[in-house]
Length: 234
Ligand SMILES: [Fe+2]
Image (cartoon, rainbow, N blue to C red):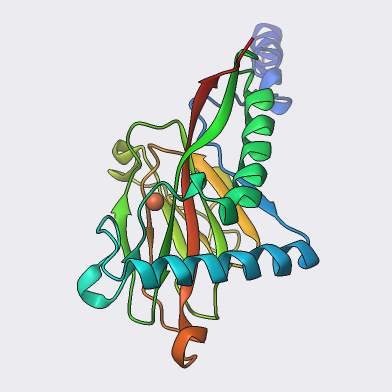
């Protein structure tokens, strides 16, 4: 090798040295935030007990309920959507508003506005019932609180709202699976006392209740709600 060739090789190696120490920065835009909160055990017992009584009373006064994402023909019951104005639901409204305040602070929302519950309803899914995929128009945030959720009573599912992203999928390593930020669907198994808040535009559905429990014990019972920004009084 001539001296000139050796010099060429050295400068080529130097030119690609950066490849061995490549610090690539990751930036995430347009994230989809989901906030969860699990009530402590004793508070869960107290609050779900109160809500169970109130919801069954409401159902007995309005046996038909209304039809939204529930499938009435299968027995899915959906209450009217202004339960937040009723006394028995006040502790839950207070809890959700407190979570709303956390979201407002975290996201830098204007202090003159409070993120507050503006509608609330209950759904009873006896075994065999599910909820269609849907969104909640005309609100900013929506959520669910689990009152009763026997084993197998139906997972809650979000799907990737970026549908263009579903057109082509990378191959992921078998041993590690997809990293969380590459998931195309997310499932939550319901648990009494758990609260999940999500953007109202995020499609979600509930799989069928396959509980083997008998009678009312097999019912999957939830409270659901919407939140919007309300101008605080001066
Ligand atoms: Fe919903």
